[in-house]
Structure formats: C-alpha cells, structure tokens
Image (cartoon, rainbow over all chains, first blue to last red; front, side):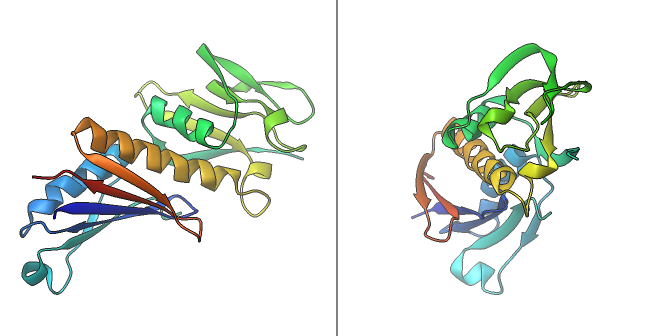
Length: 63
Length: 133
C-alpha cells in the first residue's frame, strides 16, 4: 500500500518518508508537503531506493 | 527587559496558523488592519503590529503579546517575545510543530488523501497519509 509518513518533532522540524511508490513517483507526492511548508527540499534517496521502491525526503525548519 | 524576535519560519497559510493556536488552547484575536502589540509592561508598541494576536495574559507573566502579521507577499511574519522562546518556554516550537501538522494535513486532504494523526510518547507528531492510487 502506498503511504507517506510525516514526522514533526518538538522543534517543528519535519521529515517525510514515502513507502510503496515506484521509483521516483513519490517525489511529486512528497513535494506536495514541501510546498505546503514553503521550504526548499533536499531529496535523499536510500541506497535501496529502486529495490524497495521507497524514497526519503527531509523538509522543514532545521533552526 | 523583553524583546521581540522576528521569526524567519515561512508561515504561508492563515488557517493553519489559527488551527495551531486552537490546538494549543491559545485564544487569539483577529484584525483586518494590523494592530500594535502590547508588551509585558502593558505598553503598546506601535512599530510591532499583527493581524492575529495572542494576548500576553494567555502566555507567561513576562511575555509580550504574540502576533502574526500578514505581509504584502501573502506570507505571515511571527512576532514572538524572547520569553516565549527556548530555553524559557517551549510555546513557540510547539506552535511551529502544530502549524506544520495543520498545513500538511490540509495539503493532503486538499488532494483527497486520508490523514491519521498519532501523538507519539516523545512529543513528536506522526501523520500517516494514505489513499494513494
């Protein structure tokens, strides 16, 4: 099942991770949340990105 | 001595700001034209204005009013006194946290997705977004 999990820590920093998407298909979905936060996004693809069809992206306030 | 700090966090969604304040049981007042904030001594600060204001009585004894000012570009500028910032208070980080939760929830629901919120034991908020095809 495709899903995205968003973790917001107690300082307001946000991390989002996508599961079950094929290849880079999740980038577009993750960007929905990055754009909502008005932040530039750095995409960090996992080593097993293509094998497990997951992608991780960090967004948000790191101050 | 209490001072205001301008916050660089990019607040772009008015409704999410209000949702964040409601989530933390912080009553607020709204103004079409930005109003001066009041400092901890009860003095109006004409140079520091806001359209959404949390009065200092809802914060701490040494707090100034907290305000959110609508900027010409449509973003919102937060005005927060240093008494409401770490290490003295966790209220500002909690507002940022609730804002992020609200703005992400609204973004997902706008696309027709389902959002489940879990409040973790360590204080983090987890949003599970499902409904993708």
